Length: 141
Image (cartoon, rainbow, N blue to C red; front, side, top):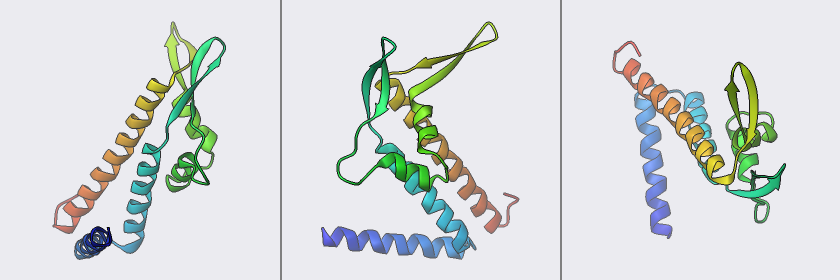
């Protein structure tokens, strides 16, 4: 396992060197890595169903030990309230005839919502990095 870790560390050094070559500053690199770490922690959020109002409601599984992926994802993604993040996965809003209806969702739909959010954040990071590379190579971004 130490061999793999050395290779990972070397790969990370090469990544940082490449980003520096493209004039990506340290603050931008930090932000990119922080957001990517948030996406990874977001992917670790698992759900259980609890019955509420006669329906299955998704709630994050209790963490083992001190690790709480919701807390980590919230902090790394720059959000202020873990409960707001949890609400994104436990409810959905439906508009019917101009009226907003909040529907509780089960764990499979919550996992889908989690994955969609993670993909959306990752895509935004990717697009931003591509834009930074384009600027560095003389394009307009």
